[in-house]
Image (cartoon, rainbow, N blue to C red; front, side, top):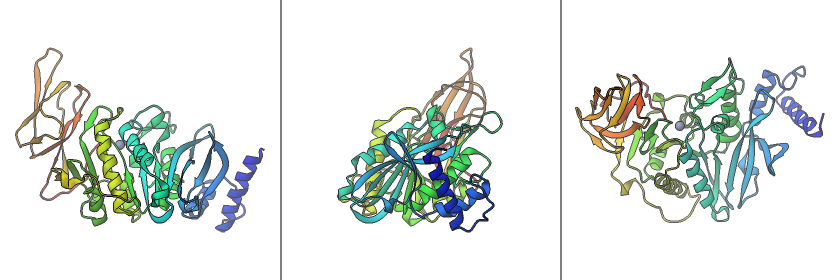
Length: 393
Ligand SMILES: [Zn+2]
């Protein structure tokens, strides 16, 4: 047994002892892991003793333990793989010289959403900790195995390969039945929640479905609305928490931490124009919280913003090639034709119209479609919103 392993076991035994678990428990059992949950929740930083590429590995983080006035690059130890190795995620902490609010930025909950990652990286690269009051923590690659193949979902080894959408897992469960559930629990309990006074979970559309630049959040929460209004983007999807459980930003809300989700265009590619809008908005949010000094950039006040409370999905009824008749951000009226579909002979087999007045929020970008696929998503206002929203964030 290596020194490193011995050290890790020793620490785990210590954690069990501190929470008074029975001495008969051995490290690695579910009960031992459960016991470690409370130890890992806001109880300080735990270094595993490992380094990867010169970066220290932590299994729990309290940003207040890090040296002030500089940036720190760490790996956080996520769930174990079948080989017994771990999925590590990248953590960048800009710890201000002076104390203040703590904001957490996340991306990569879905593995095909590149502009969200680049937005977070750009914000972090613009920060100068020596001039900051407070701390910004970024995790850009939350769902590592999904990112490794640039696909939306996590390939889980439960019964053969199941593809699991990690944004249906939060706040996770350290003793859950799947690796992504446990990974979510480890990250949420030991890395994200303990270091957040506010949080932003960045997304894009999904492979095959392009979206406009917009934010999803509950405008009825003043602390959330204040942040949503700081983005110079044209759409806000006002979505109450109960309409979308298990997504990361709502897990933060449940923990009393104001949070929301930006949506930054198409999956798989970088959209530099949209990225800049969200970088500007996020820098505004950091100024709003007093972490960064300086004048506000452009905000929603500089835009014509459409605020809707519901998404109207137009689903394909046939198979075939889809031609869009509208563009992202276009206003549409009830009855307006938005797409036509042709079969292999070139005959029109379906025409699709909007049933609502609203703005085009998303469009299928894969030209071929089978019945049931969303072709167009229109943001609109339902007089009495109800039910659960189905939106591929
Ligand atoms: Zn996403």
